[in-house]
Image (cartoon, rainbow, N blue to C red):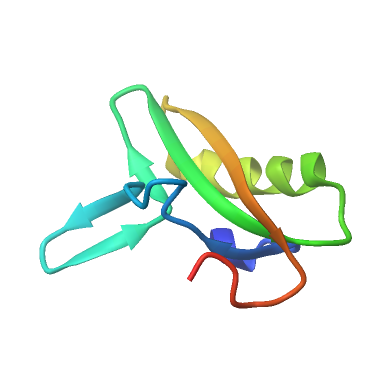
Length: 85
């Protein structure tokens, strides 16, 4: 869902590689669920205004977040699809 937002190149694990949600047998990199917030880390493609991309990510995730605040962090700006991998 987040990576389908225009301008988002990839979800990232954050600057220290620790941002992820752990599920049985797998993890979702770039998304961390907390009691009061959903933390999302992304790499964006160069060319679009970053505030617009962040707003679209918040809008996409908002309906799934319940009462949690959605915080979006841009960790990288790239011109390729391989960002954050």
